[in-house]
Length: 380
Figure (spheres, rainbow, N blue to C red):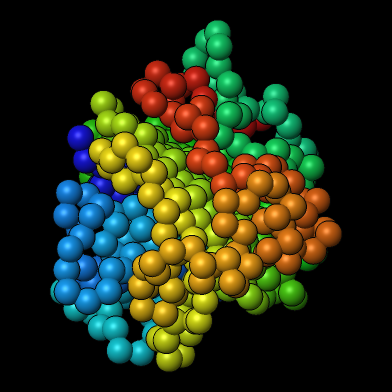
């Protein structure tokens, strides 16, 4: 059975921007990490090629990342949510079809995940507007009984959090979002979780998710982004991401499962992004390994970020010292040129990216029962 990321967690979307973030937004300094991510992550435009049988294409001209569902969907080119957000370069008509067009942010592509994360966690916080206090693994409560592990999809950055509490996520008085965050200078670390939220207009849909974001700062400008996302709807998915904005370098992993569908995954590292002033792609390559839909054999690709053209082999990626099939967290930390402080704070993220192997099966939920077991119903 085919899994399409276009449909992945689509039922999250009605609630994704309804919250007020992890604190009063009037007290947040915007971090702009979505705009920065557009300048450091691959952006694959729809329609560049047509996929056949999910992952193979035979067409005139060079093969591109759009030829593969996993690459084309996960790195889909999105840049606006008109009329509220427009981060697109010149030449993109964000008002086309009243904003409902192929470049609109969704919650089923990497850049869309990041956009919704920024709307959910808010900006830089200089004071605790909720309850001062730390959290640890025991702070997460479960809706299930024996065998519960409600912190399974949360990374251990607990020592960064000094403030915690609960918020009315959408003004309904029913959907509570639990948060923890930092107020230290130099970075913003935020955790926000929702458990079985219901949108009034779609009561049959449920939103369960964890957003965990770290933004290393130069003043108030984003320098490094670390992103951990887990969600459960009809499909269940997990995303781990590290980005160094100055060099446009990134490393990412995706794992997705659901219903009777097989697991699919993607692992990628390299250079991505566009110059938002001109719309031109930055020079460089990225490498990816992935299983696409019903295929049995993992695929690999070395992709030229300019034109998203798939190279004949991995040689261009190796020539740029992209850690193809890397074997240690240090390989990724070195490639991303992380500072010593960032390496320490992001050790849990680096552990998830320690090898080029896919995330293990236990890193994503597989059933409604596992949602109760492995997602926090609250944070104390």
